[in-house]
Length: 417
Image (cartoon, rainbow, N blue to C red; front, side, top):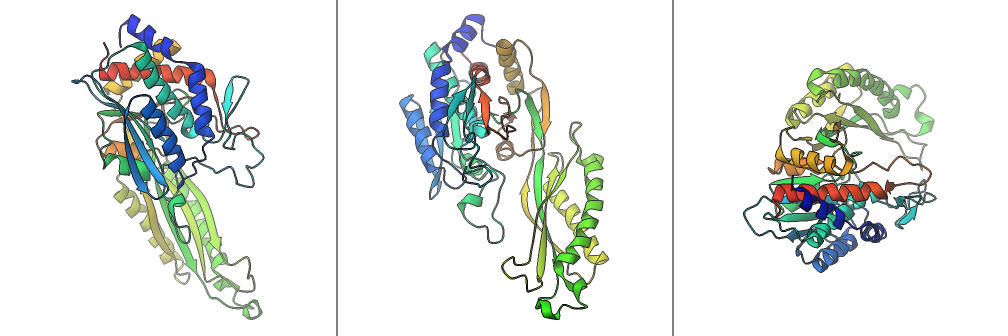
């Protein structure tokens, strides 16, 4: 940990209003997955004005990554701050249009900052920017470089069936491009909302489609053939899947640091709402199977497809088939890693106590980063996602303190003088 004068200088240099102003500006730039270009332009402009060297990575039309570098004097380690620009929602969803915190307009109320994407994760991007500004304003000179990576395409979504296009290309699409185009560092802080806890690991995700098949005929000719309807066949298959799920969740091989795996029945598709005078020829069931970072995805794939083969044998006339269409591995970092120690020390200096540990079952870009050899810690402020009346929001005090921790961690990792 830097000595007391340096620590005091850095924490005092974090400017609350400046942080909030940038966060509000970021919130007010819509950046739904597949349309992050305008947000990337804001990040590039901001980092350039701060004097950072900026690399523009055009991932595809309409979406880009931005990588800013605060160059050190040399001889120190490089720390990356990584955050995604895409938001979980657009705000245009019918069930969200009336919720102010799910709109691309930032506003402050009772010490909290509201707006689309503030918690996941434009608030963290604002903390990164303010942490770097504080390091600059404090007069502290770093030996190593600090990178600020603003990436597209992190949100858990993928192309599937007729859902094609950039808006469906998530699951670390931007960070995978980042690390293959120069965006590498010795270690990385990823400011996903963690309630101020240090996340030592998170589960990965495997998405599985299970299908049943049946005849395709007019209602008038279905008498006596109801058992050939693919939807009704899927009802039996679903019951069998629900019997299998507890075995996956209870398997000790699928547990990680005391947290068990979990399976979600995420979607069911079959038939034609505009033509219910026909029986559906196919019905699809979609599962999200969470996989611990200690299990190879090839093993998980083999195991779930073995379950599908069992269904096919149990229901031989139903045309049961399966397809794995997402494999997003989890991530973990050793408790004794120097980055964990740096965050611990910074958190204690700001909050007066060491941060708690956590394991999560959500996905993050730590998956791509760690597999490229960049040890990554998820550490950020509160989730702010659970307010169904007002929408996404974060405590401003929490943002300020988090920015202070980030700056102190950078000083420790990169070497401050």
